[in-house]
Length: 232
Image (cartoon, rainbow, N blue to C red; front, side, top):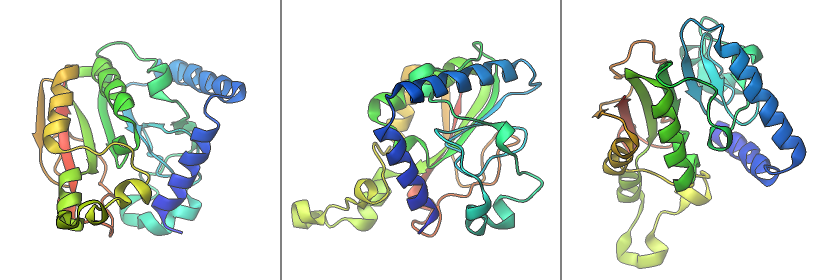
């Protein structure tokens, strides 16, 4: 089973149990733990949708903790060497779309995620972008790496066939909920308060400290993803 398929199965299991009292209590404890830890951080760097790739010296956020051992063969030493490898103490199971973030306005130094935002619903994407904009320092960067809906459809669909020619695997196989285009991402970023959006390529962020970008993998070419720096 591929890395992405394993993670999608875990996400689907979480969503089916999202509203239980036990789940809500767990999320609140994790939120409180992050709030306490934030006061001890000299620099706040947020890594959303981290999966098993927990980065040292980052606040790694996802819905559940996943040990890296079974996934190291996918990352290899290039993307997940011991030098950048964090542990469970660097991980927080916080659902930002439900609780927000326990950080003051203008307090976060850097935000990074790849192949994450497309797994959010349209509503949650706007909540996510608004909340990250709130906590980011003025002039700081929110680095986004996400599949490009336009490139995916152009590469894999045959619209002359109508319904049967539409490439639906983006949703049905990859578990994506709301894919973006560059123009849509830019409009949403400006809507919630970002001052600028710079599109570039893989590992070409203007921000210092962004880790090597693992995605896209062999399932799509580099131009199949959007690489963008959202600037507060």
